[in-house]
Amino acid sequence: MFLGLYNYWIMVVLMMIGFYIVIAHGNLVKKIVGLTIFQTSVFIFYISISNIDGGTAPILAEGISRYSNPLPHVLILTAIVVGIATTALGLALAMRIMEAYGSIEEEEIQQRDNREC
Amino acid sequence: MKDLFAVVMLSGIYGLLSASFFVALDAVDVAFTEASVGAGIATLLMLVTVTMTGRYEHTAHHKPIWALVVVLVTGVLLIYGTLDMPYFGSADAPGHLHVAPRYINDSMQEIGVPNIVTSVLASYRGYDTLGEVVVIFTAGVGVLALLSVTRRPEESAEIDATNVSMHKKHLILRIVTKMLIPFILIFALYVQFHGDYGPGGGFQAGVIFAAAIILYSMLFGMSTARRVINQPLVQFLSAFGVLIYGSVGIVSMLNGGNFLDYNLLSDDPVAGQHLGILLVELGIGCTVTSVMVIIYFNFGGRTEDYMRNRTKDA
Image (cartoon, rainbow over all chains, first blue to last red; front, side):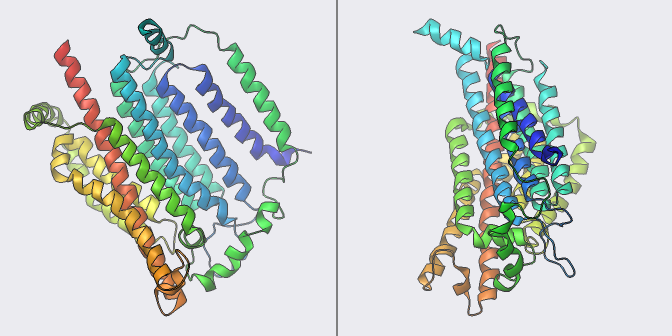
């Protein structure tokens, strides 16, 4: 009965995989990979909402009357590019942490902080 | 998985897979962007970071059991929340009834552009897109502030010496790349200016254009690429793109309309829309290209410096 909702369940599973990577792993690069998986699950959520049975890509053409909803496409298109910009910023921070601490493992960074204060 | 190189490669494959998934769901513009960004640039930036931070992850000492519990509880709650949602593919879902019919039915008369995604992106929701462009520009400035290094000339000469020995090896790759780069650049321009009629536009074109420049600097070395591509010019272009976008809005205000109301850019409203979309997409393309180039060059330069200092210390 609820089988028509499978797109949301796929999204939830992907999102939880990303969430688990972010909270369970100490390596900063791995955390950022987890964050991108989380991000993609939101993209998939929006795009699957915009899909209509029997619709086509939203480019107007003769003889087609049914199009997918173009609005989520626009939102996600810009979100992807903004997402890469913020990911780059996160990776840049990880590189600076590597220079300052000599490690990107959360536990080692915390140990060094504790020793210093 | 402890090998971060494998993790990064898998995330690139995942990006490509989700791009093909978007094609299957009729979101061609989104798929285009995801293929060039998720599978291309993101993987590349992560690889550069991994070369600097080390390839292997250390084993964790804490038990991840609590993390698992939190994740499972959140997942179950989210799935419970989906039970009220409209079914996949249903045409009468609330989201499809409000604004979308106007875009689908009227955009041809109002904007005169077949690709609805472009007309919504650049015209109906132009204000939003201006915000996104500013966010990208800010990220570029942030990376510049975090990673930029001032270089003395004798240091660059030293880098050159290591690069020449390193880049002699890939002769075939270098020749093939040299032949491919013009085509990649032309394709980027096609995507930029054909975005009104097919999938494409400033965001995708910007990323593809930057990919060509990044490919060049990967194979011929950072210092050669730095000589070919003037860094202050790239930094100027990233701000210039935002300026073009904002100026289009100001001009339409001076002509007596609202901010970003392209109807007033020309005597004929549809011609005005065309002109406005063209200029705005050009601004987006400028900013996205130059921010991507800035990000890659600073990542690469920082890693080079770090590696050299480490070999010196050892």
